[in-house]
Length: 124
Image (cartoon, rainbow, N blue to C red):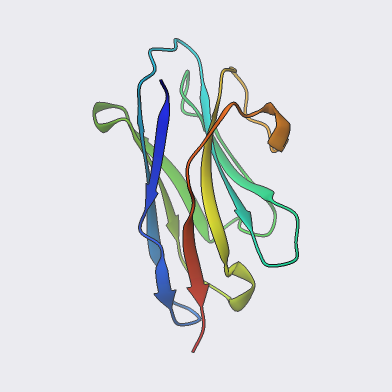
């Protein structure tokens, strides 16, 4: 059974950095993508970044491009989201999700497995 466990959230001041981790287990797929989504209070869950397991290609939402970096460590079955220059608008619960696919997508319905989420709060 696929399990995704996020960690690394917390409280950070504007302009600060955090690194989120998504530890994946229980799958032996030849092809998959892992994405980060976030959901702020009163807003829809939005896809912000994704990495494809087949070739390591990545995508970013415009709102985080240039500030966030997604990466993967195959040996540890872990995907990271390095978040720099954080703003108050980045405050949200961050989720990682896995889809059986070759290509990244920000369509929430395309993801089969989800982690429990980790809270990120950007505030002075």
